[in-house]
Image 1 (spheres, rainbow, N blue to C red):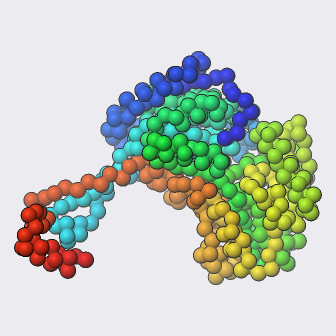
Image 2: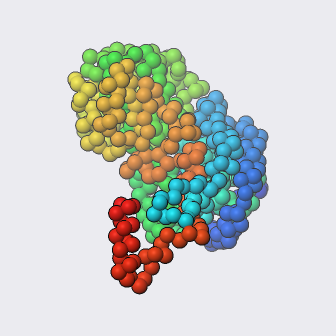
Image 3: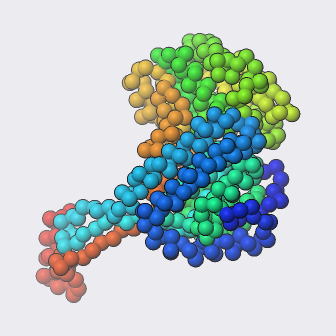
Length: 487
């Protein structure tokens, strides 16, 4: 989590604008949530659905305020807010409302012959009191989506919005305060100081979305409490463009996936690997697609948002400048304005694997291109690095596509498109290793915030009583017989 200075406000939602709170108030709120978790655990599917319906209504009533807040935080276009912030959470709510009765139903499991006389099932019960730490890049969607899952599973929780998007955080506080009681869902505002105080508390599950560096800190904090974690992180997600790909459609989908939200997307294509003979055609197709979407001067486009803060602007321009000094060539874009925190949609070729743009996740509107002579070079290049959150493959040769999937690992994959696998609530979303731990969305989100409780019921027939002590010769013979039959 990045911070430009501590917010003065440290508040917990209570249905209206909250006054500044003393530091020990966080502990008091946590204890209230803990005390209420048993009551919330016992809520029925219908009761939880009512809460989700109320949340949906409150979101819909605040849509203009949400658009205004995101425009204020980093000049995000209203339509892009609808598409990437509002639409996904409303879909999540609808899905949970539709399926929650089924999700909560005990799941019967088969009884093996060796367990004759018993019946077994899995009950989904809430983890308890959970902590959700939201990021700044999609500050509404990535705050509310895990809240939906946690509410569906019957948890109490603290939501910690990002301090880097204060206007959106204020809307979240007002929204949550209207829908939920303070001892069910609380919003704690602040920066790294408040986050550290929250991490020190014994929550039963920690859900964090953000950088891999901070993810390690959250995992360490959770381990001290023996708590489970979900870490939604990032990494360098590759896009592979085979020579069988259609360059026009490939370029449009790459431009959309890379430059939406100003490139500040955890699953954005972080770099392209393209067949050597197709690089020129791809660059020209990318140039055309960028112009089509953002105009000849993206700075004038109302649809291209800005970098979140000066720190990230400086980091991005530093990476670009260093790569150019190392021999990289800016083919498209490169224009910048520090005052507006604007960086044009930028494409760079002649990028070396050890260049600055390849050293870490870019998380901005800069797209480096590397080339390969043979597709067999691609998988070893990718697998030599940290496992990415997403992998994209463009081409029309199914055998080659299957080979890439079989020889790589990634949190998720889209074939002949980018980022949209995130939008299917029937797919689990999450990373692996440095790109994350655990998953959510739809049923997978419900499971993430649930404990799968094993329940066995013994009937009148007790197959095991024949092997109780004392271990007489008869018992030993019976056990040998059981081993032959059942193993």
